[in-house]
Length: 138
Image (cartoon, rainbow, N blue to C red; front, side):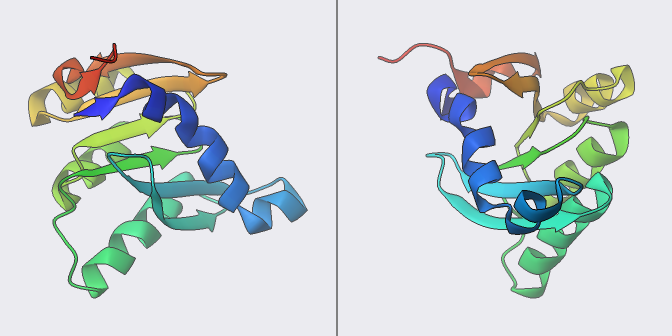
């Protein structure tokens, strides 16, 4: 379970860790977070798919997969392929700053993945797996 407030804060946490983006303004990033919002790993690349591949590859080489309990945030749109990669790596929650494709939503639902899109300015939409998101504080 991840709190809505934690999800809302993820883009700022990722942006503050993007060193190359700060210099160039031209790179995508993927951040891997704990369910409490702690950034554990960030990777940048010209391609958003490559940034996620770098995060998953790093954790795989470290023997730290599957990534259950993790939350991934991608800096662009959420495609079918990103959902598929997250699911294979065991990432239960995938968030995107941009829109998910309809194929991504369908795949997330089929694979039991929580998919969050349009995550910006403290707001977001949950497209699949809403049971993992605590919308209100107890």
